[in-house]
Amino acid sequence: MNISFLEKDLEELKASGLYRSLKEVGSSQSREIILNGKRVLNFCSNNYLGLADDERIKQAAIKSIQEDGFGSGASRLVCGTMRAHTKLEEKLAHFKKTQAALLFSSGYMANTGIISALVGREDVVFSDKLNHASIVDGIILSRAKFFRYAHNDMQSLERALKGAGNFKKRLIVTDTVFSMDGDRANLPEIVHLARRYEAMVMVDEAHAFGVLGENGSGLVEQEGLGGKIDVQMGTFSKAAGCFGAYVCGSKILCEYLINHSRSFIYTTALPPSLASAASVAIDIIEQDKLRRQKVLDNAQYLRDGLKRKGFDTLESTTPIIPIVFKTPQKALEASQYLFQQGIFVQAIRPPTVPVNTARLRVTVMATHTREDLDLFLDRICRI
Image 1 (cartoon, rainbow, N blue to C red):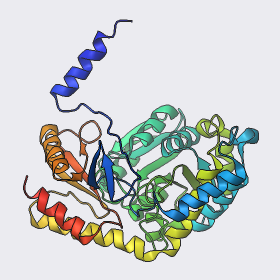
Image 2: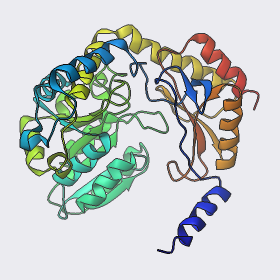
Image 3: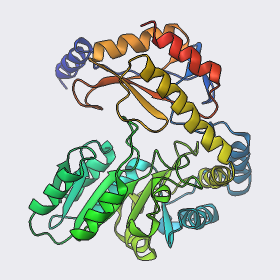
């Protein structure tokens, strides 16, 4: 096989500042990590509540392994559905105030599996331009007609809805918290437009789950729209500090996905220990309001400090705080400088973000101290 084209592509990525490589973490995920052998403050993890190394979650996983073993042995529809899975689904439905819930192995598999099962060639999907790549891939797999509306622009969405023509089914899909910009979707207006134009609504709560809402279940809860969203998807890999994903909605929705979602049907079930850990994480999220408030307070403190120093943080209102440097090279230089200063924050470059919006994607955790935040502000201002 001639692999010269692979080498050429990698050289072009390096020359343009878009080359990516892996960095090894030699510790548990927390506010401090050991990265490539160096201890640094971690400002780029989605571990918003600091639960990834929480002792209660670790013990839940250990207990499950001792009682249930590790592997689930088969897909859910064969013999892989274990009590830990059904218990978590019951807890999720209660937590999200829906009729039912269904587990998926990852957020990517959930989005691709849900969307491609719900819509097809005779249908149309309206997707925010900054939606996660897994949403985009799910739409492509579905082969539905695809309209991308301008980010958080409800006039753009309505124009698309008006001009789309006749389709069998219509689906509006959006992140509730956008993973690179840290802003929130205008859910009330999306629901309003969906009703006017007879469309279903699907939301991805990955970065809102565990952080927003009175009980921490997400932006849907915070906006009081629980009964008006058709499909609520989310993950356990961020604020919950675990792994896996879910969809919440009606019993009919979950039954339909069990029978039609290929990424659910044709994959081995989550290890029961992961489901048991996630179940404990939900308890912590619901009960520990101070932890949830701490991450929001930390984010506001850091965001205010950055704005006073003249940094562009876009429209962030969550623990995700972008610092825009425009060019990939400048974002890389900033990331490398901070690493030298004992702070790790990753440079995010196209195609993950649009051209000319390369940035540092700063994420704040509940476990960060005020001293950590002040150190970050001091060091970023030296660039």
